[in-house]
Structure formats: structure tokens, C-alpha cells
Length: 502
Image 1 (tube, one colour):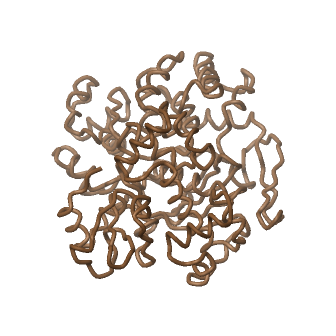
Image 2 (cartoon, one colour):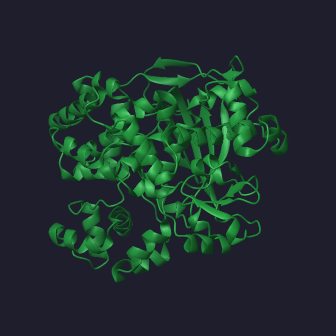
Image 3 (cartoon, one colour):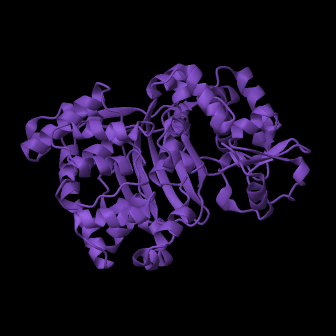
């Protein structure tokens, strides 16, 4: 990725936080790298180099600035927008695929050889997949060091390092101090709910219209899985190594996140999924500038800047919601989903104060109950295998729709359908429409919310058509589809605004 020196230097000189995460500033005279909005004195031009990733800066021998914390900057919005191999790879790396499956596993998911994948990432980001994953492990380790009382050995393996020695060397190289010094410098903030709980801040590029996000999620919240209360969103999570629970509270400048994990190795995936759910890596200025150029949307953009696309922590869950939501109201779909959940045995937390080797052991029991999760904490959406085990009577919906969900569950369970954020968007939409009962609307909805495609229009959606009519736009699907070309590449954001207008 080529970086224009003059443009980047102007952003650094003005401390423009909109560019945080887009690139990193290396200062050769001090040996550190910063985010563009770092409050330190602007370095001289001859002492500056710009890097497309933190991993590239680290590869050049620079350490992270301890004042602006560049590793905690929002991610580059490119990896949300782009559906190519590099964009997909970055989303998978953020979800911890390299830590779990190694570079061979990442390459296999993307359908490329390791060598070719390494070459593409080096060309775009100045670092290969291992270096990018290493930079993420360093950030995870710093978070655990500064926000938990875990021992250093436990943190090393929880962050994905192969050994304590590797952990110590990486932290020293990236932050310029030993792990114990990071803890001493910051102090350990006690976890609010005991062992297994981490509190951290999730940065975003302002503005963020938090009310729009919370309103959308509250209307669709499933009992026992999620809720919106007192300005915070809380839900259960299914993660690669166990279960978890997240509480996300939007505030000025960041989203406060409290994560309750059964396995600390799931910290990076949990953070990536929470960021994805709230669309925190978006570039709202670019989106709003495009949409505001249309006089029909200009008033809404001015009144409500920073409206995001509510996404998903689980692509399978979102696909089920889409199928059940076909041609019914949001309230009706929520009722049907709630009824479906009551026919599943669900894991129920019994406590987090049992310690095993210094780590929290969240024990669970399995028991059906009338109100899933009521008074018992939150759990993630049931897996495809669990849904396949429900009897016909448990679905509470027409037979055709029931069989659509079962066909989807079989495709997900056997690996024939990839609903992960690193999946190929066009291929996934094609495979979805090959399943019985799934058409263009359902596939588009999944692409927008599960796969993160920023340029999806749902012209046949009743809410979209009503919103278009309310704003004086054409509400005929074909006419609206043609009109919406002016909103590219942000038609998904226009859809959310049309829903709000309706």
C-alpha cells in the first residue's frame, strides 16, 4: 500500500485522529512509532517514515509509543470495505485464526498457498501473516498485563505465544520494557466481577451515533442471548475456546467493554467480534460525506452523524435471523426466535470464583427452561448442530421456512458454507441463494450484517421502501435500485438511514 508522504505528514502535523489506524508514523530519531494523532511534538520531516501497519513498523525495529498507544488505535477501515484476499486475511487474523491454526490454516481458508499469501500481505502491509499476528499478540499481552492479575506465564499462553521467553522478548521489543514494568507503570485495575473478567476501551473514529446502534439492537434482542439496558448492550458469546459474555457501553471517544471469558485465549477473538458488531473500524466521515451529497439524505446526515451498520458476532446466527425475518415484522421474528430458543438445552453459568491454575473456570450445566437465560446470565446463540436436533414442533414456523433453516444448518455444519467475516462475499451470497427458500433479500441481509459488506442495497425491503417514500425518494424497487448508485460504496449505511426514516 503506497502512502503519500505529504498527505500523511499533514495529518500528523494537525494530529487528525480520523487517520488513526490508517497508517503509523515511525520516528527514526527516537526509535518509536505513533498513531497520527499522537500529542507529542511533531517530528521533523527528515526523521519520519510512514508504515501501513504496526507490524511493518515493528519489523523496521521501532517500538510502540507509550504515550499515544498506537496498538490501541481503531483498525483500518480498508479491511471492512475490501472484499479481496488481503481484506479477508486481515479480518481472519484479527479473529485469531493464525494463533489457532497457523499460517497454513489461514492460507487454506483463503484458498491460496502460504507463499502467495505472504507475498500479497507483504506488498500491501509491509509484513507477512506471522508478523501481523505477532503484533496482535503483543497488544493482547499488554491488555492482560495491565488489566488482570494473571501471572506472566499464564498471560504468555493466553495471548497466543508459544513460550514465556518468546512473550518476554516480544514485549521488550514492541514496548521497550519488560512485562512486569508495564504492570508497575499502569497499576492493575481490579476486575469488577472477579477472575475471568477484563475491562478495556474500544477506540473508534468519531462521530458515533450510539443511540441508533442501541435502538436497532434493542428492538431485536433475544431473551437470554442479549439485552440493552441503561445505555449498555450485553450479550453472550460463542468463542473458539469456550463461552463468554460482553457488556458494551458507548461513551465519548470510546466504547467501554467488559468481557467475561472462560478462556483467556479468546480475548482477541472477543474484541474483534465486539468491534465488528458495533462497526467501530468504520470511517464515518467518508460515509457521511458521500450520503450527504444527496439532498434527500443530507438532512438526516446532519441531524444524526456517524450512524453505523449494526453487524454480527456470529454469521450463522445472523443467517438464521434473516430467514426467520423474511416477510414478517421485526416483532414477529423476535417472537419466533424466542420460541425456538426455549426448545434448546442451554448452558447456565454457576459461578466464576472457582480457580484452576490461577484461571477462572466458568462451570456450566445443561437444562431446558421456559425463559432462556432469565436471571442466569447470557449465552451465545445455539450452534448449527444444536438447531439440527430440534424437532419439527420446536420450530413454530411454516414447514418451508423450517427446512430452509435446516438446509442452512447442514451447510454450515459440514463446512460447505462460510459465514465468517473472512469469507468470500460473492461466493457466500451465491451459495446462500442455492439453498431452498433463500433469495436475494436474505443473502443481501447476511452480506451486510454478517460479512460486513458496506455496499448492499435491499430495494425490496418494506422498511427501506417506506423510508425512501418518507424522504421523497422513489419506493419502486427497480427505480430505487438505479437511484441508489449515487450512494456507492456505502449503500449499506444508506439502508440503515432509510430504516430509521421509516
